[in-house]
Image (tube, rainbow, N blue to C red; front, side, top):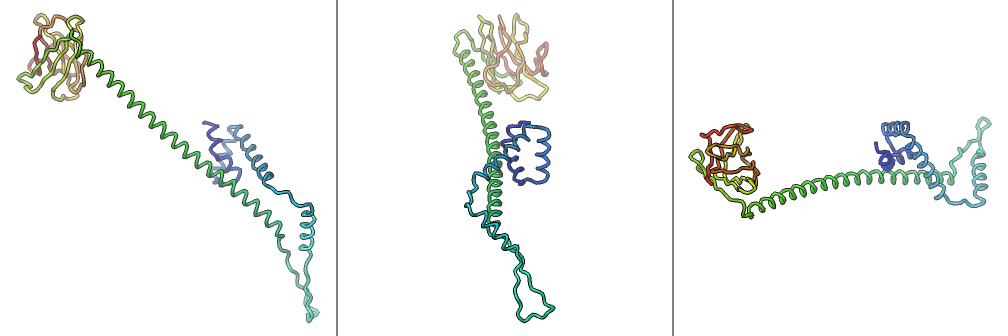
Length: 273
């Protein structure tokens, strides 16, 4: 619970002005019981409202008090209207006292001040909520931009690494055209015989099921040697296992994770060094 955010939301001002529903008032009272700093802040708000009322009050004229007392005293006296032709049984009529105009103006001013303060508190709370929403949207947008930026940096880094291989004269390119099993298939390997680094470049290999993978083989001393597995949709140059003294390279379809020995009847491409 962020106490500072709760205090700055404007809900305490609404509580002080009685502008909350019964459920919201119970919630504020529960928060005050749990967090003393919220109770202290409410006390400060109530004192601030009192200071505001005092600051906006006008100093009355010196004779205003005596005038108000005279008006009240006069209006409290019953006014008897004489009845010239009243019978002995008739009684004089009493006129009821009416509220003083001065008191009416004082009550109206108090209500106006309360309404203005209540409006300001509600308006502040609404703006606070809108600001929080805009801030959350801004954070979300920033996170998306950061993800896109990182992904772009990764892609640029991969392209730069690929270019270093493609432009390095120590890497030899061995083309692997399709076999009778897949005449349209095509791939290449880039092999550095000095460092024994090996990269695969997929050009056209068919899509496989989820339980299958392609496996690259190097023919060393007449025997197939595992050079690593890869997925059909791999992009860019794929780093494979280091290899030395290879006479040829081939790709077969194997169960996911690869096999110890190649499935020759599933061979897709083949190229000699």
